[in-house]
Image 1 (tube, rainbow, N blue to C red):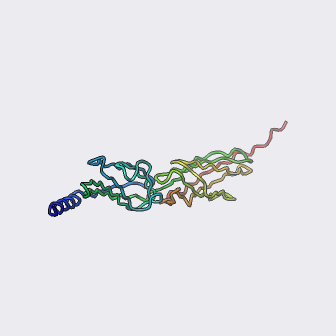
Image 2: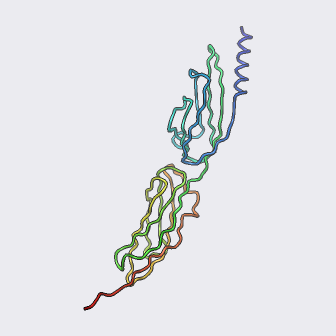
Image 3: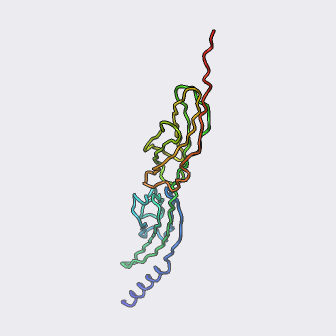
Length: 224
């Protein structure tokens, strides 16, 4: 009896070694992805483990860690190991199969601000609205940024502006100048962060080209 127990234990051990599989996966920060394993038996014990901290580095958006299918939202860049273990009980002897996956989450949260369209001023008084489109790639749905203008006196700026989704329109009310004067300026965004705490990875596309608001003729009144 002792010999049979030893043989069974050895078989389970070599099965565990033989069925441990490692694979590679690459994702973007802020990306959700479904991972599914087909268990041999629905009554077996299923366990997922993922390195890093749940709720900070990653979160589950579907499924549970004791189910065959889970959806993981990758919140922070880094390299993670996902391990799935299926355990089958044989009258007090547990035999397990383990499969593992290395997930590389790229640090690629990025926001780009596009140039604005040049226009005529609305007059010699009041303001002229100039709009800039910001486009987000990867990262969390919600994000914030600061901005400031270069070329306007005084400069127009803002801090911790809230944005949501992949695009945001920044509209600046630029004061018009008397005597039909033109105004040329650019906009720089900075301190761009998503709600997971990731920073913009490419500051090279955070400055617009110059845009000009052309002054309108300062025409006098009709006399009669």
